[in-house]
Image (cartoon, rainbow, N blue to C red; front, top):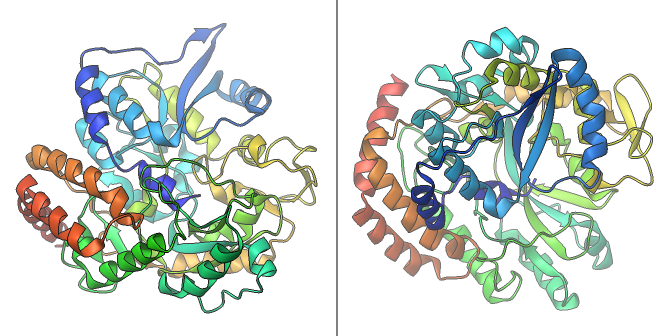
Length: 484
């Protein structure tokens, strides 16, 4: 999953806030209808609708209908519009049934989501019991759980993914790539030889990573340093390590390795195509190195190199949360549906891998082989859909790889702020002002479009005026109390 696309969901834009105000008082019903005893639950999902959506859902809904007398209807919202759309829906009090959470902690504190603390163990017990404890800790707010987390990469690191076609064409080796700085000779070679290919693909919402974990998402300047003092809330942009990485990205932008409209562009770079050479991807244990990306690309086309360390973090725990709208008329049924989605192999594998016989064939009880006609556009992504533990693995996934996966999950380090969720009720105005400042600078800063040092200086001055010190002080106070 594209790191820069995921990041887009953690931020509400200025336009979002304007629409939020405009939407107040215009409550709309998005909740499902019941016909012939079968209720159709309305689900809001981010991303692109599969080309064979009707075929996929016809098979899945047969099982849903048989088990709980319900069907699911997915409504897809594009990456660039999702946060804005969900902000308006929350402010308007729309009574949707299920949605992928946006600004999870903040909206949960606002009362936008149903409290699932008692509902999940009762109506989705199998899926709930299967969750890694980090998901529970990372999503519990004031003692309550408002999400059915999608269990997948409970820890992860930032990787640079490389298009193997160009690695082979230019005889490039990535074994020494461990930082952004190490990319220079590779990007230079491809940029010189491939004028129609973007050397380092990124776009609006992209974030440079430097081993920080974020209190309220990576779109806001409140973080703990995973390489430093984990007891202090800091502005990640004031870190010398972050500045070094931003300077490197700025250098790449100036050299033309990055698209010159990256700060405003929301274009896609298909995984299977040759429109890109390198890109930033989040990789975790269920990706089995480069295997998941290769599955998305439809073959052996991707190599990866990690540039950050492995940590179980709040951001990973909240990476993809299903929530039930607080105004839904079918709360218990919605929880049952989420339970099935996250525990029933027939439903989940049919949606994630696509139609059996077309996209894949079975090679064992829990193993499959992708067909030569495998089409990535005719399935749903696993990372934001359901429990990855019950997914079939491709036949090239060995028992040793699965063993390593489980051991790495058990042994992964935990972020100092895993489970800490900031109560922003006393600083809402300041946070809104800070968000506006970040909306102004974040995209241009993280895509290398502007000079980092001078831009951060201006940004920090505006953050101070917006109330940064007040928010940081309150955040640190709550964090200190939580640590005790």
